[in-house]
Length: 304
Image (cartoon, rainbow, N blue to C red; front, side, top):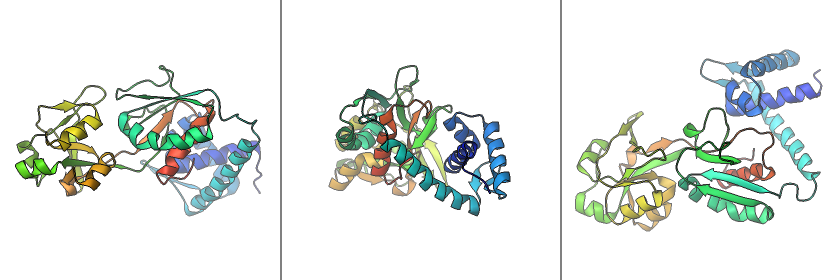
C-alpha cells in the first residue's frame, strides 16, 4: 500500500496539476520541474498505485475514470493542507509589503475593480499597485509580481491561472447609427459601414474575428478612426460614430440601457479567457494567491 511520504506527496501534487492544466509541459513549468521529470514521476506513481491515472495523446492529457476520482479527492486534501498552513502563519503574514500587478484596461475594469473592496478589507496592510497599460511587457524585468492578459498573450515560460471563462466578442452600434445606416446582416457587409478600428498594445490594428458557420475568420474592416482605449471606443460607438468591436462584458450596462445594440449576433466569437500569470509559484507575494481567488470566486470559479 502506498504511503504518504514526501516523494509521494510531491508526485500527487504534480498529478493534480497535470489534470488541471491537461498538459505535462504546462504543469512542469508551473511546478518548476522538467517535462521529462514530470513524465517519469507519473509513471512512478502509476506503478506504485498499480492503476492507470492518465490517458496520453499527442494533443492532450486526460485523467482516466480512476484518475478523475483521485484528483477530486486530492483537491480536497491539498486544500485542507493549505488552509492548515495558512492558519498557523504569524498574524499579518499575508498582509504586508507591496503587490504590483500589471493589467490591460479591460481586465482592470472587469476583474480588478470589483475585487478591490474585498481585497482591501482583508489585507489592509498590503500596498497594492495596479498599472493599467495595453503594451506587452516583461513583468519580471519591470518589477511586477503578476500580469493579467488573455491566455494566448501569456509567455510560455509563465505560470498562468485562468480567471474567467471565454470572453464573447461582439459588434455593437448605437440605435441612431442603425437608424441612419442600417445594421449589417453578414460580416461581408461590414465593408459598407464605418468601423471604429481597435489598436493593440503593440500599435497594430486588431482584426475583427467573427464566426462563420463552425469556424472563425479575421476581418479587416474599413474606418478612419482608430482607438486604443475601450472606454473611448464605447463612447464613440454610443455617439453614433460607427460600429465597434468589444468584449460583451464591457458593454453590459450599455446593452441593458439600450444605448448600444449588438449586430451580427450569430457571428459573435469566443475569445480566450483572462489569465493571471507570474514567474513561479515559489516566492510569490503572500497576497497574490488571495487576490487571484477573490477574482476567481467573483467569476464563478473555485479557488486554486
